[in-house]
Amino acid sequence: MPNHILPHFGHLKVINIKRTHINKWMNDYAERDYSFGARLRYLSIIKSIFHYG
Image 1 (cartoon, rainbow, N blue to C red):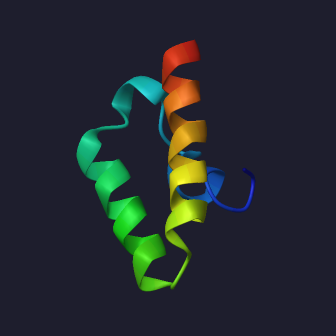
Image 2: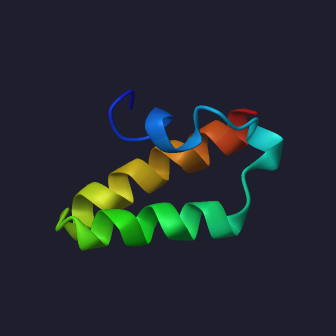
């Protein structure tokens, strides 16, 4: 999480993270050739954070 999620969203409050932020983040990881499974895993973590928050 510190290497994949915090660098992109750490400066934002959870309430300020919008779908556009997440889409940009996912597209950035797709361009870096991260596997689809890895991107889904990170997205699942973000969903858990939103559910908890």
